[in-house]
Length: 177
View (tube, rainbow, N blue to C red):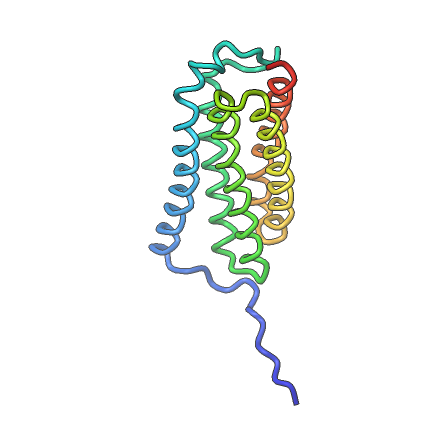
């Protein structure tokens, strides 16, 4: 007779408050590490080639990006934490998807800003491919997060919206630079 492994209990008690705070801080730190690493490619190039680039007519002023990304990275971290603390059977897969989208997010900035001076317009097209993959990865992450924590899924929706908007800016830049 085959022995069946017990399935993880749904809605297990969340871990203690100190562990929850520690993990929330870790998710926030991971998000802002990605932001910080991305900013290394941005700082020199926003006032360099990008300042003179042909930008989309709907492109917001540069000062808008910092506050928007701060809000989005914070929401991403809280969403991941909400999923982590639920400990549902789908949590490991959902958090792997979260990690994938975070890696794609990290890849976009140095490709768009950092590679353009070296390889020109090809960098902008490569960045467009990355941001399209990122949008898909975040959409799949929303679908994975939603059944575990509706709030977590909803917290990622502004991120998806902003990425679609950012993709239009990337597309314009690729076409016109």
